[in-house]
Length: 104
Image 1: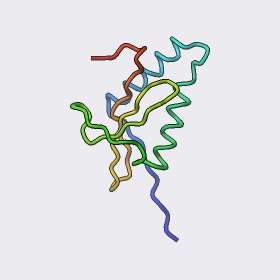
Image 2: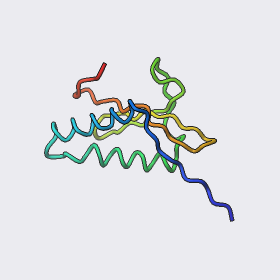
Image 3: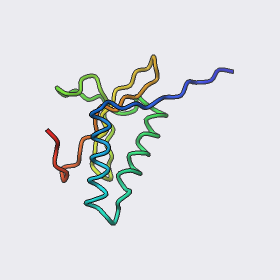
């Protein structure tokens, strides 16, 4: 019997900062649904761990050879890179919804 190595999730500095900022902003600006972003983000990560190549490829000047998973309920986008040989998902950034001011 062979066991499949689990997919690990790591964060770039920018990805971690973006995640914290988006989560904080959502809680401050949506008090009635303060956990919605966090719950949707966690569900997206669970999906990506099972199907890391399941999101479409993204080609932007900042994020080359990356993939993006849209968080439909909150309008955020998780940008990540998956390395099959190490089975690591690296979160590169979390792009804010249109309502949240973008960081330069």
